[in-house]
Length: 198
Image (cartoon, rainbow, N blue to C red; front, side):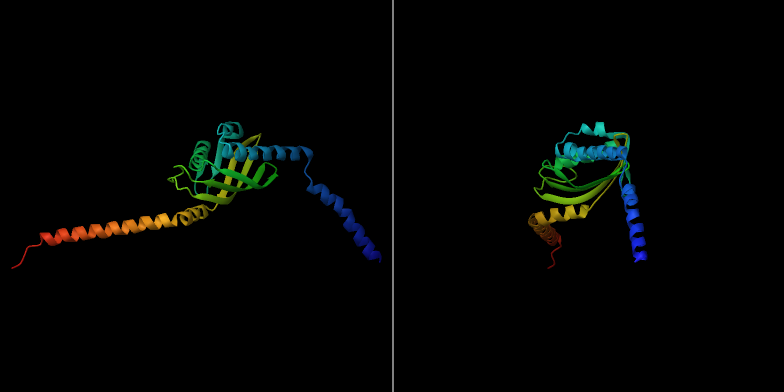
């Protein structure tokens, strides 16, 4: 019985220390809350409302978006944002989960929009796209300095193809017919130019 009491006492004595280690100091918690507010502005103001000038307020001039094979500066990053908003005028970015720790903010987001205008390398297709991604930002002194984003662009392409399959099949059928007609015309021209044998 003494051993159980001793083990219980040791275990309960460790609980307050563990809880204290888990909670962030008030100033760090406050900074993490501010960083989350900055991250939220990217989605709500820049993407959803199209207030592109907000980028000048919340991104550092030496910002780097770390792509998988290439890094992008602020100008290239924001050009992509403009193109997305142009191609998907009804674009809505929803924050699903947001977590901040030290100077990092991680956001799981959902992209929803309808491709009703040319842009982002697409003609207007009328196709609706919905995809999920994740972004990690490093925010220092109230400015976004670095970004790492990942999403499945093949999922978006698959949604486009699925919604446009009948149009694509129609185009393919038209192309096959045109090639067939072209081949027939070329064959007839060659046959009419052959020397006639008596």
